[in-house]
Image (cartoon, rainbow, N blue to C red):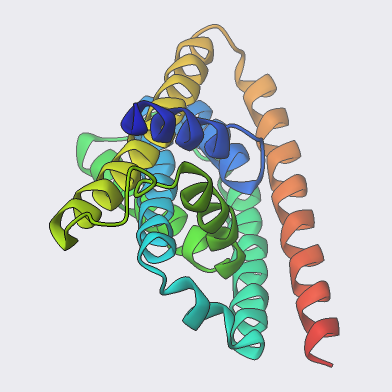
Length: 213
């Protein structure tokens, strides 16, 4: 039951449309399922890292340094602006790529999504609340350390798989629809994605700078 709850929560955390969701959609349209799913898996992997930190209580250490959190926030916002510029720049490139180019792109898409998600330390907050709510040790206080670690890893694995399932559905659906869309429509989607992602980034940079000042 703990694992199933964690899967549902992982899917729920990934589902709201934000910068990563827009990136997943844009890349699925541009390069197909492999690129979109790699983007989602990068985010899911970063969520798993923060989930593990939240589960074992390291979250308090990360959140005890507001200045570090703000620096990461500014860096993440700047990274979003850079990604938006890259999307706009690549809009007119051909949609077809070689297998080698697709493999390199998928690896790059995974790493950028992973880094972008990790650049927002506040991502850890929902995991703290989630793991506190699930309370894997509620069955008693005489459980062993091994039992505690098993429960922790079960929750983290469930959150990861739930998040991955959402990205699988999103990238799969988008890549299927890609076959029925005109090139001009996909360029329009890329333009809107670039503007939205750039706006996310600018807002994050401005709010981070204001907090520091």
